[in-house]
Image (cartoon, rainbow, N blue to C red; front, side):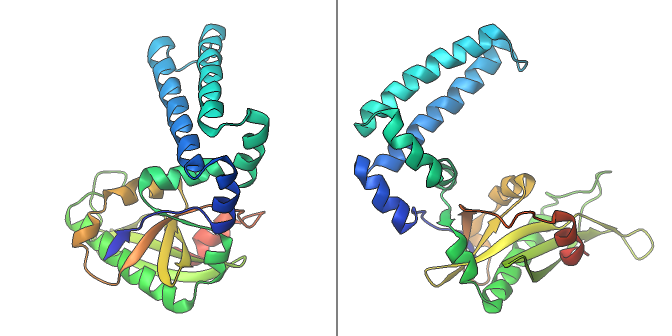
Length: 239
């Protein structure tokens, strides 16, 4: 089954964070949640378009938020902000909010072809389940009925792409591949969805009742291979 694993910061990041207390990352993430709530409130109050009034309203509340974070961490902004940037605290917060494990470049480099195979099997079972519920449809509302997943090493990163298919022999149609990064987290095969749409629809999974190999869902924190030839990756792992 695909399972959501408990997330943790990388050891180095966790060690650095303890400079500001054992709950530093969580307290920072609480501040990030307050900021996102401020943005949502501003959109409701002033509309989506940016205005000077809206900007000033956000800045005033963000200043209060920074003051609260400084109080929580017991240190001024100039001390904890550089660490938050270099250790990607913002990305780590995403993993915490989703309940996914945090994986970094070392976890990706540790992955094997066996990990990729287990990820393929788990994702195919996931998409079969979702297709049975007709949760994924093509542009004209026709449901996908099958899925094919394949893996490849691309710029040093092991990736798995899954393509949905539907229709018949003469009128078949295919989705663009959903691409995932394959990792090995503490001996467990793990995948991290890369695209924003993939990150959102993977939350539809009812992890507990998808049978197959146990594979954890992860959130990638670290540098991507740049320049990343996304078009080539789609071509190599598409239908």
